[in-house]
Image 1 (cartoon, rainbow, N blue to C red):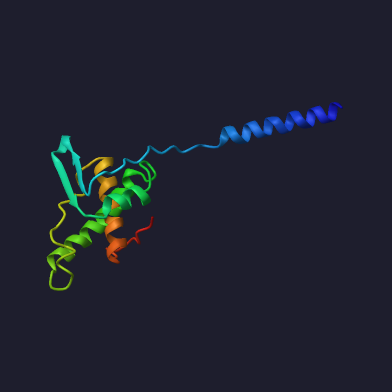
Image 2 (cartoon, rainbow, N blue to C red):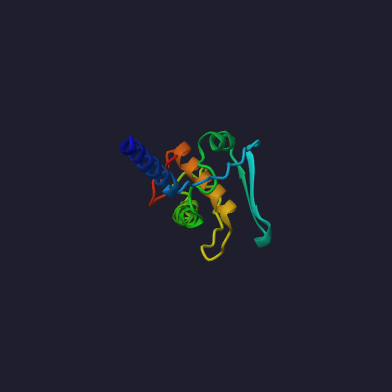
Length: 143
């Protein structure tokens, strides 16, 4: 009887130790987008992006990862590469569809735009690449 009690006690403490050591990563809920006109801004930097794309809000609500799924540095690294390629294609309108790359994106890698701007820009660039079957280079977009 003592053996069973000791065995059950040891098993109980092992289970407690295993569950206590697991780090649970929590994610903030992603915002629900209601409109196809998306405003991304950082008031402190006086920075604003407006996105007019009919399908983005429904795609975002269905497929975008929640906030804090990726770190800000991860989002910034993807955005830098993708925006550089986007701007290159916007300047070469004779080689790339000018209806896709109508204007360049003013994204300075030396400015900290904050998490929200990088999060929304990242999600839009993923959506854009998947929707238009484009690869902006470096990293394949995944949902």
